[in-house]
Image (cartoon, rainbow, N blue to C red; front, side, top):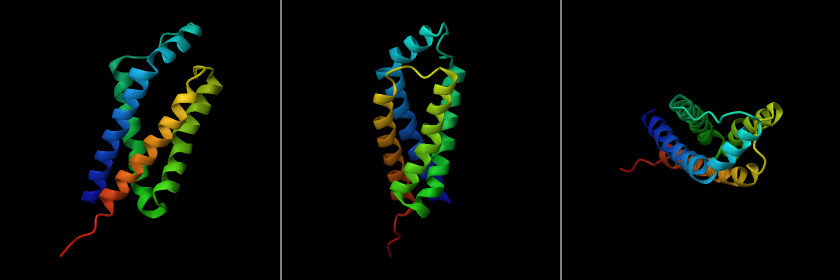
Amino acid sequence: MKKTVLAIIAAGTWMNLSEFVRNEWLLKQVWHDGFQHLGLVFPAAPLNGIMWVVWSFIFVTVLALLTPRLGVLLSALSCWVLGFGLLWIAMWNMGTLPAGLLQWAVPWSLVEVVVAAYLCMLIINVKKTG
């Protein structure tokens, strides 16, 4: 149980740092321009940021539980489709997915999730010595 909690903390920290770099440093203007084009203001209040942190930790909790059973690639792909894929489909359906975002977000998020799954596998499956 301790290893699983440690894996969740490590993978969640990684996911949140990666998401922050991608969405705040690299794609912030894309998000703002996309929402402005719709006549909306991009939701950037602290509470919005907190909810994305919660989302990331829920995501990696599921990832940490699946990775020992399914392996790194299958658990990462499964979680990616259910987490990111469905998120973007819903945003596209609501008309709030900024044009040009996916060309950067898809590969970045795939790598992000594979690294998180690999961290989970490394931490949870550490062999005891002695």
